Amino acid sequence: MGNIDLSKMGLSGKMGPIVAYVVNGKQRFRTFTEPRNPKTPKQTAHRSRFGFVSKMVSPLYAQIKLGYKNDNLVYGTVCGKVNREAVISKYSDLKIDYSKIQIAEGKLQPLSTMTLQIDEITNTVTFNWDYETDSKVKFAKANDRVNIVCFNEALPKEIFRKSPNNRVDGKAIVELPKHWNASEAHFWLYVSSWDTMLNSDSVYLTYSRI
Image (tube, rainbow, N blue to C red):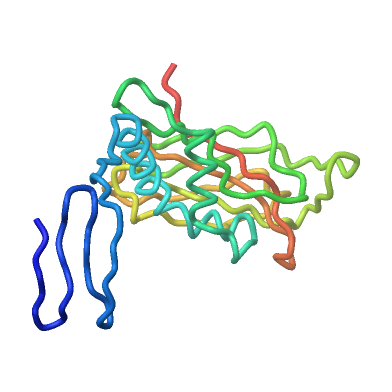
């Protein structure tokens, strides 16, 4: 219903499909549009999925920026990539396949033939890799520094990175926090050049029970 505003000598309110109002003493009209609910089931599922991805990427983001050596890497770009490549979806149950997430990317030769062993008494993880390099494939040096990113999904804020050894060592031992379940942790290994200017692609490892 429309109202007459005597102070402004104008109409205001809804009259059928028309909305009348006064701006700066001038009468205005516009067509009334029924409000629409944008939250269709498909849109709700999409928002829920992206919210899940954003939550899971958040603790990894700082390490990804270091690994990619890109301070300008946008959070939304990382979330989009994880959403496309690393989300396992079964109905409404969403999970992350961490093996599909790349923590680092670069031109150096990555580590190869990697294995890990877990000592549950000391909560330490021993990593082994092939220290031979092949410059025909990608650039590599014996003194490339090995970076190990350690992540516990149950305690995401406790993610950390160690750089205890060089490529030539072929081995590294990392002690995990005592309250971590080492067999459920996720690890990414990559190397950096001695001057920290270059990185390799990361390689993912986790404990597998046979």
